[in-house]
Length: 72
Image 1 (spheres, rainbow, N blue to C red):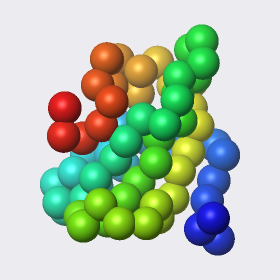
Image 2: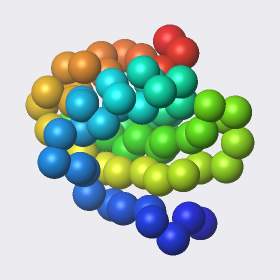
Image 3: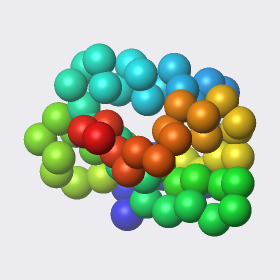
Image 4: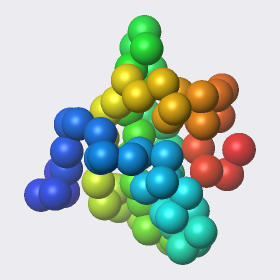
């Protein structure tokens, strides 16, 4: 498991995912439970997980919609 793994959302999770995608990297929804979502961040190669966070941020949930990852 990566050492920099977090179980809480960054200050602006939508901005994090947007910048991650703009840089060519990949994110994936690992799980949804009620109004909480866990998202993992991967390098552009899709290799080993770099970080993850769990959030109940309404803006993040709206941004994600039904998508399962950055390639949806």
